[in-house]
Length: 288
Image 1 (cartoon, rainbow, N blue to C red):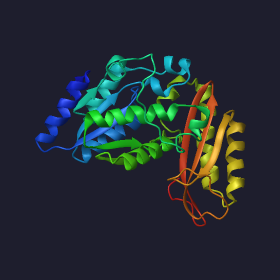
Image 2: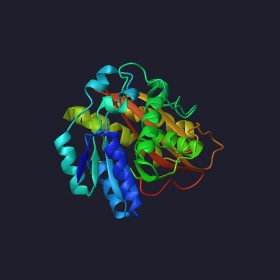
Image 3: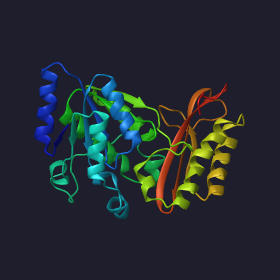
């Protein structure tokens, strides 16, 4: 596995691979890799792609300086995991490489109106502009590729999917189901910042989703139920919503078909998110 640090080397590698008939599988990350990332990499490898993993903590998507400063960094462990999973390249560009004017504001940005302004975007203004901008740059440097994203960051997936559609990027999104610990906790780099007691509280997000999935009550009752379960576990609830999985619009009692339950909350100052599929007007999605 190669470790690259410059945009030119990264672009050249991808161009060379395509010239020799290979397809690129891009796995964007912010480092602090865990088994969820490993699943993304292995999925790309198993699909026959030459896998490029990017590791870049993007400052444009952080509105909270403390959150940025405390984001976990495990570069040696990341390299070992990426190599073990079969990545061909691990790209670690510097902030100067990605955003030469930083900390001065980057003048060119990408915004996905509507999808980026609700839920996480409501509480973290500018977050999804930062996400869309950096992902657009990753796609521009990598070129035509398959891009692998985990469903845990469901709103991020919706934003990126809309951007790809609207901008006609030569990118195919491949989504991978959320990877969970044995107790159901969604794997996240942020989990490392929780104490054992905090992690136990954070299971409230998963338990809230299980409660909603197992209920035949109305949408409004299920939303209330999710919030109550999280609060009882010690989670400071940011939201508990049931939405259309494409538009992320809240659904009402007349909605039938596949929906998505989305939850978010704070535990020990750490913001955590999770989600699960729901089938409304019929049997709930199997497996959750």
